[in-house]
Amino acid sequence: MIKKNGDVYTGNFYNGGYEDRGKMQYASGKIEEGYWSKGKFERTVNPTGTIEFDGGTYTGEIVDKQPEGKGKLTYKNGIVYEGDFKKGAKDGWGTLKYKNGTIYTGAFKNDTKNGYGTLILTNGTKISGGFTNDIFDGKGTYEYSADAFYRGPIVNMLPNGYGIAYWKGDGSYEGYLKDGLLHGEGIRTYVWTGGSCKSKGKWENGRMVTLYSTTCKDEADENEQAPSNTQRRNTGGSTVSKTRACSSCGGSGQVHTTISGGAKKNGITIFGEYHTCSSCNGKGYY
Image 1 (cartoon, rainbow, N blue to C red):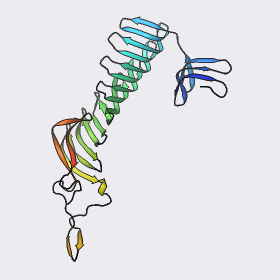
Image 2: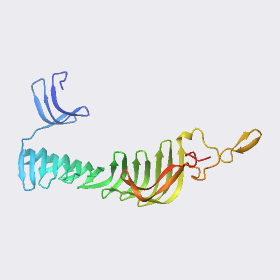
Image 3: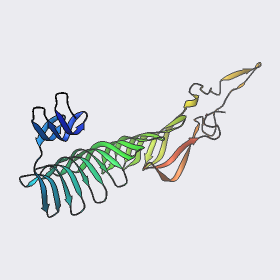
Image 4: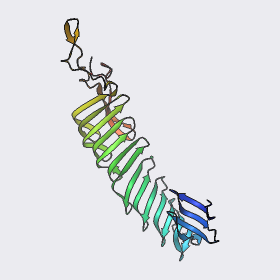
């Protein structure tokens, strides 16, 4: 990048500012080459080299015969770390790749995961949030797939506690979970093209055991609400009932089907689904 005053910058950018490795050659002849942060020069590049040790090999910047700055550490057991080092320890921002395919990218302190980071498991699940001494702590985001995620407390690398789960095209759940399964009281919202149902109840190990209430809405009929059984219309001097609630779905327009033994959907085990009532075609009345 050539500035109007004649300064020339070559390197990385982030959010419009100079970031990470870069070189600035000023019009005055002065040169700053090394690492930048938020548009400001931080430090020059340390001498680079290779250090062999019993557990593996380090290649990168070295100060006082130990890793300092940017580098790559390859262990003999197949683990690879690439990122920041301080006084020989992983410290700063980096990526740790395990032999089994698990990847962590985030903050390190004194050779352990400390701070915000994202852990990608071998099955594609992403866990993002705060880490303390290599252990995930507190609340975070648990992504089952690109179309399904949970936000809330995560314990032992699984959703545990009160949180919100979302499935693209299939609604959401707000309530309690245990070891990744719906467990405790909550509200499950099912959605489909043209409508939705909201069920309040209690779950145990992913299965609803008590249904408190269910309310459904047909978006196509929002502007033409179905009249109650007591409403009448005039037919040439006589009055007849205009409509009555569907006996199959109780007027909700949806019926619940139980899945024996459960089934996996977007990474979550479900034991039932709502479908459009075939008796009234989802209208809730005749």
